[in-house]
Image 1 (cartoon, one colour):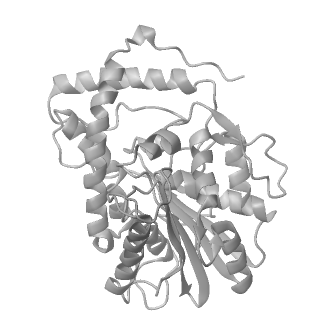
Image 2 (cartoon, helix red, strand yellow):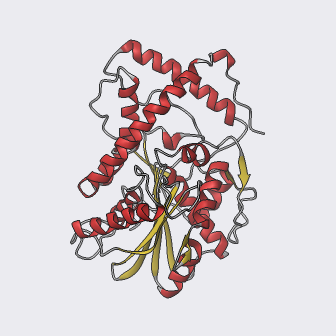
Image 3 (cartoon, one colour):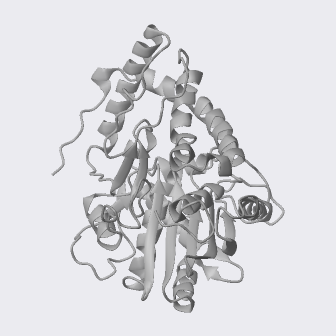
Length: 389
């Protein structure tokens, strides 16, 4: 992976860190301005604390937080979405990282509107960027909602992100733009990048445009995946953009249930049980019911993931014999496993811990409702997946 001058973290590692920091306010309820300030301060602290290891990143756009509940400057909100862009000189050339947050664990809107609204697909609304090889690209209603929200966000001085990226590329010929995000951000970042290209009518002149999604659920159908791959091809092995954390490729822990969602729902078999066998059997039966229910709901849609790079995180030392232990494993594999694999644990310890605590708290809360719903479904009641036409 390419190194930045006088640094020890690769460009991929630095972009991943900037992605992670977009989540710094996700466990907070505050005014939108204070949520934005918290992310700004987190990026500034990251750059200062890692001087000599990373480039001199500075905020170029945002941060901008949004809430479906409104924009009263005195009201307290959870951020539905958080978006910012940071710039620096890397290898003597300008680089812009556009980073967007994942699911706000305490915000029901994110879970319902931007994560789980996947039964309905909609036509890709932003054009094909001049590529005619994907006739009918579609994305989930959830991804469409998230991308529309991001495109509607405005920096008071710089306007919307799509126009800002276009202006930045004109002012910085030979530059690189990287769209990045984790979890929900791992679905939104490639989709926002594709929308930006599409609205531009194709690639930006004299600019390298890349993505770095991680743990991203599948955004859309096979034609959307083909449209994305045309503009964001998988790096050639051995190239500067390849490696253990390649650009344009969803980074996926094989023990993480989130990036397997929609296209191939399989919630069982991710972990080796070293605890109570009876609990394992009960969980397998419960999750098999959830698998069948999910397939019955989305079986009439086709989802195809974008290109992905897998790794297998070391299983946490947890003997799960309760829902708390089981969902603790899910959170560990969805969050903490990624900075460990990328090799940036020491740069992100505080943010990772805060994200894990907030996610585990909410997953355990939602698990009670999910369990009750699944136990009400016997396998015989679950509809069989519809055959794709």
